[in-house]
Image: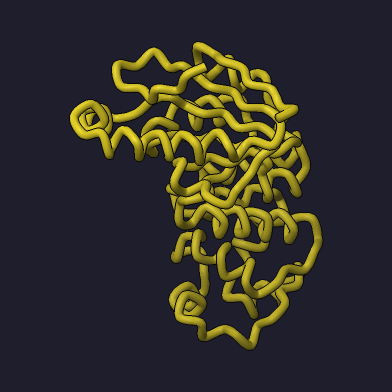
Amino acid sequence: HSGRVSRFATAGGAIEQINPTESVLILGRCGFSLHEYETILQARGIPYSWIDRVGSASELSGYSCLWNLQHGQSVHHDDWANAIGMISADRLIRGEKAAWKKGLRSNVDIIRPVAEGYLAAGAGESIEQLVRSGNWPAALDKSHAKKATRWIAAAKRFGPETACNPKIQLSTIHGAKGCEGDTVILSSISSPAVCRGRQAINELHDEECRVNYVAVTRARKNLMIVQDANLYSLDIPA
């Protein structure tokens, strides 16, 4: 009740007001409505993660693992398993990527940043050299290399803890149930199907009201509603 509600005309205008070191939820009715927000965050080098997207947490764990090895720290089995899952198989000892994926390396508990440690983990000398030089994104599959480069930039700018556990999280409204943020940015973009149904069936209109309620009650302090200039949008009254 002591919080603040504000409105913005664009996603960029709302993102300009947030602090990357404070908890922020960016919510949308549909996943595609958050694409613009993700693009802006990437362009500005701000770390973020997805609440309801499979693989997001494991990727961050893998990047953090390689960063820690680069800086002379030992890493845990689970984090290395996430890292090796992103490394190109042709850079690893033959069969090791599949072995880790199948859980056949449970005896390797801690990986130390020394030659013997890399060999025990299934990585050869080339991986060790890339990690030591900080150029380990070059060892990753193409789908992860660009993301890893952005992660390194965020770690250097905001610290590895914030890069690994981003304060800014994106999610659909349904995926954010049970989650809270000091600030919530709510996109008003909806979809043609939702809007048609809302106009035709009273029960669907009521359901949209419930969805909106879930979204606005995720905010602890600030609710920022983005009235996107879109033909299909949520009806969020003042």
